[in-house]
Image (tube, rainbow, N blue to C red; front, side, top):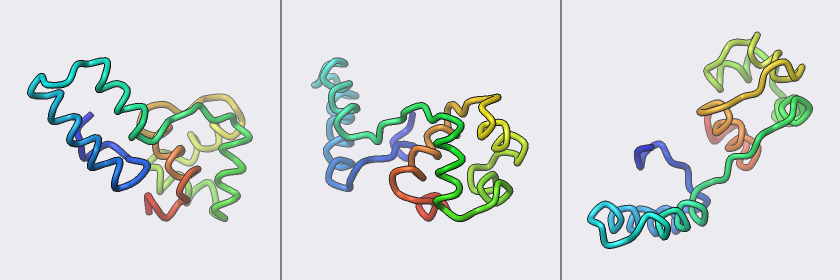
Length: 108
């Protein structure tokens, strides 16, 4: 994951993590310590249940179509998530996590 793809808990933690990452790249910090910085600084991503996804969308007061547009997925996929037929993963799960913690405007 490149530095620009990462989402940090705060701007201060972003600066700390980027410094640690640079130290790791020049081999002044070991992999285990870098993992600890990842856990401390990066926004955690947890699985969401179908009900949590539906409640999240409803909390943001948007339709499935609008929600799908912001997440860059199909309306059908949002519907499948909300029915529990499929589970989000990868970038979609990360975006949902951001929306959960910071609101839809963070990805709008």
